[in-house]
Length: 221
Length: 302
Image (cartoon, rainbow over all chains, first blue to last red; front, side, top):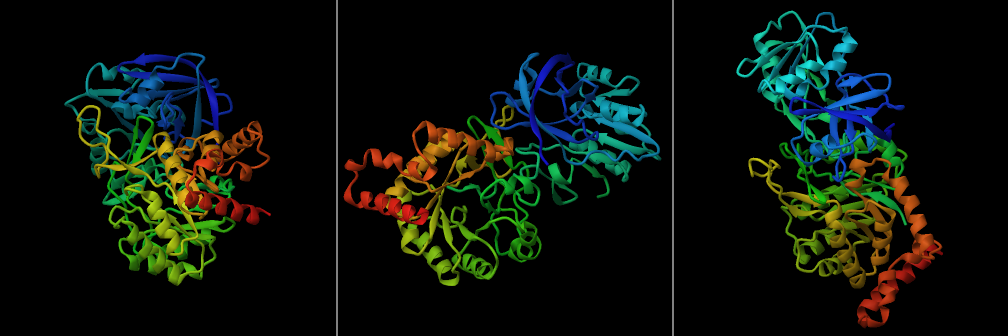
């Protein structure tokens, strides 16, 4: 059953170039880490898919990179304003892992703080383009941080249950190193619930509808 | 008035509750052979609308009949069919003639199908010859005069019209200035399409007495009312379903309030109101179409 309801913004804060948008949790189910929510972008036709970054008893936090009109509108929201949220949607990470290792790249670190909390703060490595972007690593205390040109895949991934989210080249590199990894992919979406077929991504030569088949997929799938 | 979805805007297998909240579910277009669809990126938001270039991704008629259709039990199903030659439509309609479905919608708006009225007439006539199912012709606006195409569809034996499909648009990336969609251009839907849909429904209502499913940018009850007033019998929702899966219930409630505010007892009373107001200025042939349509509708309703 799809549930969409309006939630109040409790605040926003800059995290490097990104914005952490905090909303009242209300009766919203935070779901499984790696699942996503469709956030109404004020003044725009389509909502934007965002994974959950932080879940507390009273608030849910979404980390947003203001790269287009929709994400800029979301980052410009002010406390007290309301937005409709649909979710949680899609398939999240499997949490029954023995030796978790989190890997994140850029805005792809978004789901990792919530994932880390649910897994009991396992080791994590985060990669960023610049020192400014790397300020977002503060959301995941204790994580190893690398900045371009050092790739996150330089660290030891062998023997770990890797859970990764980041740009496609990073996910492909992780997959090569660790075929058992769980990878969270990203694509533009119109609906988030399997209606539009717009979020297809070609993985291993096959088109997958990320919203219903993903966004988390096994590397070897 | 029935509330439907526009073909391509809903997947009843992925979202059965949304499909169940409509009076009928229109499938994504099915073609004779499976189609993977276009490479990503397939969608882009633009000012007042969105573009899509999904590329008729579908499992093909065989797997549609064996795998998809059995999962749509309980829904009034309209199957949208598409092809690249008349024989494709014939094959699809033959297959669907013996299947439990409500209607067939001929997607006559594929980029690779010749769009001139003669061709629409040819496809509709060929489909008509092989099925007794109600046949709705979904017309393209990429023609000089959609009303002429509508007349051709009616003459060839169509039972109704679906108006309108998307129209071609292009979006460029903010930074690179290259097309956002992998395919380049895509079909424009959403609010930008609404006045275009209204004009097409209005023109086709004057040209034919066929039932019309109006669609294009409907996101409120007021929008649905305007399509009815322009001459639609039924209304379909498209892009609004992407942002609001609860849109069918909301729009129905809003439409009821709109009808009451305008003094209409029910949706049927609002039908073709845009024509009735200026009825005296209609040429005799157009007035005949509108009156014949209203008469038919009232008989059906009665």
